[in-house]
Length: 294
Ligand code: CP
Image (cartoon, rainbow, N blue to C red; front, top):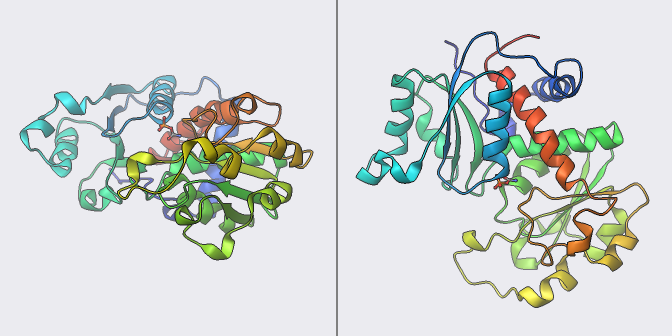
């Protein structure tokens, strides 16, 4: 078996990205019921909380006719001191074809390089979230039919966000312009900083991020009561957006913190559309790693 994995967006060429996005589109229409040519065994190993990514992969795998298992970390031999490496090697030994992994450690996958099993990274610490990036690309292309010259404003906790890191890289590579806004201590690249009101007027896509309090080692001075007014999408800022601009958010959303609760399902919001698109894109990622053809 030739091992094919998707660990970061850098692993994919532009041709790979286009193939996955095009296949996702075909899964939405002509190939809705397409299945893998043989039964594959896939284990979903989520060591960190997840609703969308976990159950979106789960749905994609079942729709493709795979046999799947959802690993229960709390009832596994991790409790007896087993390492991540030995856990994944065990799934290989048990006959699994692929694993989908989310883990809190940045680049956890580096220690799995020598295991001959397909790996899809479902999020590593603050590092990468390739399936989120691909579904975000799909959502933007679906809206604007291009990436070139799209103005993408990412707002919020950039420093701790694997979504921001993956998206900054791939959207720029595809010709979009990326600017950042949010609390100064959470912005890594000051050259891309833009005042929020200016940014909202400039953007075609306003991508909001959750403040990832669980990743803040040091207490930072963020006042939850002031956050929406200072750094979030309020109803006043919504009115400043361009006519055709859209709101995106990888979710989970903290309603009333990074976005006014009434805007989560406003006409410009694509937040739930992103989740729908996620299943299509993850089906395409699985087709890609198993090197299957329609
Ligand atoms: N967007 C995202 O990764 O959501 P989950 O943490 O619920 O998987």
